[in-house]
Image 1 (cartoon, one colour):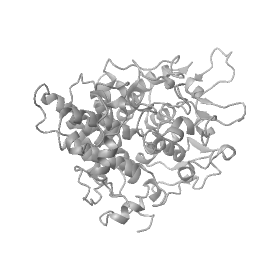
Image 2: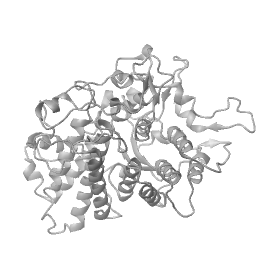
Image 3: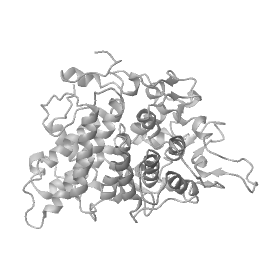
Length: 485
């Protein structure tokens, strides 16, 4: 049975066998974690290895995003092309024996980050500066924060609900600890503190060396963007808007245009554009999902299990008569394709692969500029104030870069912002959590073959069951209501 925190031996085995792309050089076999973490070089290598966790199939390598899409109604299983994958999420029939794998992955990443931070002190010797160590700590704090954030979104009710049970806040790598669950508000407070500290520590110009994709490692804008998202979930509207504005005003980013939006998803290493932070898809990653990866799962030429529902495909304005001078065509509609062999069935193209291997790999975008405009628009619709900016103005920035023939908006409330979020962020793992944090009943008209086609709010189902293996070994963990003792 697994404990909540992986053992030090397991940590060393996993942590230091990470892909070369994230390491300055591969560690020597047989080294203990004590020896590896005894030098700045070892700590730097180990910190680079943290990003491999994100590529696990249970996190951004596949199912954290895919399960969210299947549950939200954006996705569906077409039985004609099903191999059985994704059915638990599609049917919302989780049990303690069949639940998300993020618990193990998230806490493994947290333990690894904690272990590195526990060994940073006193390593600023020779050419190594205090700022060098601060940069490593900032990376570790970010990974710890995003892991806690994603865990609390899955295994707890929303921040604004009356439920209190969150997930354990972990600040130690000690494998003998048997932590109880903190409250939801304590978890959010903890992860925000981590991000605020990371923001203060990191060099604004810091770039991790030895990586293929600089957007796949922690930077100051990534920290600020995640803060904006966290404050959105906490309904801290002014702070949400303030941090979104920091990123929007950063000249390193720009909106993708109408002409770009269909093709940007297959780029290997993004340059100037919307990507703030992403998982870099590479089969060189130690934990690459390979056959279970998102491209294989969402491709008609792969397994094809995880398809797009007509609900989301038909949500975009699209005039079939392209000769009309006053027609409206939302180019995001072209991000879904229907092969001739599967008439009237659709799959997302946001994970079409890079054309470099079979099965192919894709980057998974975790934070991007459009989300910052949407975060700020929602905050402004909830009475936040940014001089010279309006909610409808932020939505117009997105719409003018997505919709041919769209009329500019002159006003925008919460419902319009939510609708635009659904369109823009579809198949990036957002809608499910937007429904949860806003207390919105889930309806899935095109998923009439699914169990639990409608999910009421509130319902115990919005918080997944904690794995039985964790409950068995930790008497201090309390299971979520609705899933037994």
